[in-house]
Image (tube, rainbow, N blue to C red; front, side):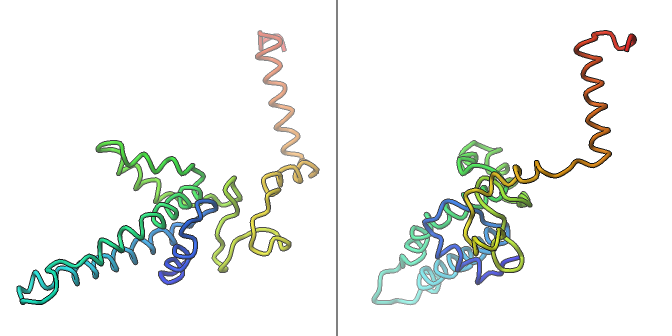
Length: 184
C-alpha cells in the first residue's frame, strides 16, 4: 500500500504518463492530498473576504484556481492509470459525462480492486515498494510478459485436468456428433 507522500510524489513525477498502472491507494491518497491543498488554498484566497478586513490587495486570490488548472493533466493521468490497474481502458473516464448514473458508475470503477496478475497495461504494484516483474526488468515492464502464458503450455496437466478434459470431450461428442445422448 502506498502512503500519501508516496502517492503525491508518484502523481507529480508521472504527471504526463498515461501508460502503466496506479493502485487504489495511489489514486485515493492523491485525491485526499489534492482536496486538502485545494481547500487550504481556497480558504487562504477567500479569508480576507470572509474576515472583512480591508487590504491593499485584490479581494479574491487566484492560487486555488491556478492549482486546480495545473492539476488537470496529473489528475487525468492518475485516473487513466487507475482504470488500467483494474483492466479497463482510459476511455472509461468518459462515463462520468453520462447524466445521473455516470458519476456513480465512475466512482464504482475507481473502487474496483486491482487485477492480481500482469495485464496488457503492465505488472501490478507490489506492497514491497515496487512493481512486480522479472529480475532482468529491474522495475521496468517487460513487453514480452503478455506471452508468459505460453511458458505454461509446457507444464504437464494433472490427472484431474486430464479426466475433466476427457469428460468434456465425451459430453461434446454426445451432444454435437451423436445428437442423441441415450445411444452413447
